[in-house]
Image (cartoon, rainbow, N blue to C red):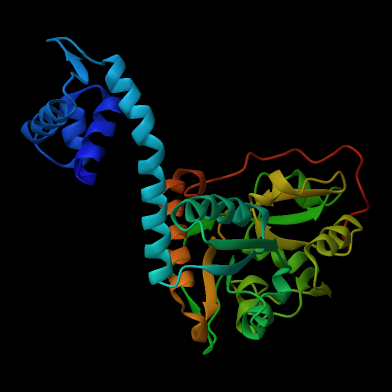
Length: 318
């Protein structure tokens, strides 16, 4: 048997339908029928029982299927590995992400990538938003999925993978916690807790100094860790913007998440060093794009339900 004939036989043994087998292999039904008849003549026995209603394997056909399946799978795995090695898709790939919802996409893409490129090891880790660019520059990380914008001459980025509506994290006892929404103008009424370590344009985008009408936005403490931001908000030291999905992952009794009514969404995308545009990186970026497209309904237009503030309230921000 030729490899294509083995493929036709195994596919028909799985589908038990000549039409579906032809569609799956992009051949004609006549080609499927001819291949099976050729195999039966060579073996000297029927491999399938055919009626007008169904197709069934004969005992000899089932024996042949079981014997060929293992060998065919090994052939396919060997060809896949050889192709991956030829494209340089071996070795290790280190991928980081800045938020739990980014991690879900990275993990899903990594599962698909491992199936395609079993000889490439994927190492995944979460990272603080304030410490993403340096690992890329130092070679400790090959790719990162984080919030945008990032515009650095030595850092490449792909398209926006998904966008999230914004929310404001406020102390549970703050008047904002009793509202259905807040606006960008409301930022003038409470100290803004910010992160450190990111470029100035990134901080200005996510933590503006003025409201749209020009009112100054007071500054609160700064920190490098997301959990410290939540602790500072819970202690009544200020408020901080994030995406609405954070309410599902980082719920605490001393804070509340209030959706913005007018803030632009938070965009997320992949980053990698411009000097690290390897076949591995390109293949993983392609896999993430495909995975994001499949999971788009989970991301696009997502909005968390409004959660009532806890009864155990902390002192409000002054």
